[in-house]
Length: 298
Image (cartoon, rainbow, N blue to C red; front, side):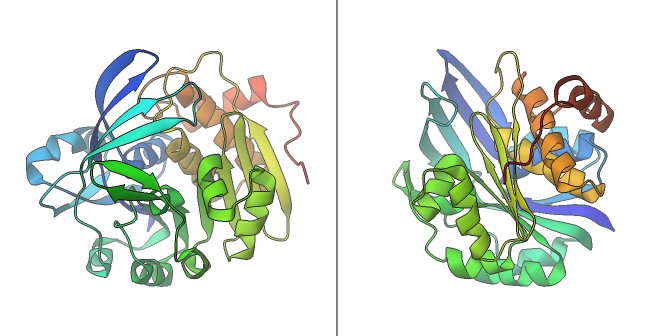
């Protein structure tokens, strides 16, 4: 059985950050699956893009990640300009790949989790979540459900079927901006408590400072990002989600899992691109930086 079957678009991207411009491969399942694989998990990816762009899948193939490529008229592509903070970014839409349908679920092998990583509101519908949850517990990065394509730009919107959709999610991931859009609450702890009411068992919220975790019936935890210099903002949330899922797959308790997620993300923030570190290296980093940190806050 697979550890995770991941659904989402892998993208051609460009960005401007601190005066620097670059082109790169991205998309939620790109960062998520590479992090999972390098931490030692068995993962597959179901994605959609124009076959002419299949070269962007090379790194995943090199890592031994099985890929199911579903043909799309276009490949998703975005240009991002970052502001002064890690959470301030402006997106220009170049193109968007075809949405996923329930038929795509047939390509997912039996898995311990199904990961769903939308980039826009059009990528997945309620029926997909319902059918996915019948196959395995669902990990959702909600990002795309708050991003509506309007012309060549992204408009940030509330997820209009969130109360129904969240019922089929086991691990729910958002960043602080997405959590505010969804709940109307500025404080991450209050926002995650609200989201827990909708149905998820575990809620992760990433911020510029670290990661918050709320667990239904257990409590609230926070672990900081500890990094000397941030060199790789893109993929922060996807890496954090992957590291948390890895920790839960390994049977770590919630306190240890949120530490592991924060530590792995901290290492990734120190360089561009997806996570390069192994589980052993993350655990060593925890011993070095996190042993004295009490993560339980409520």
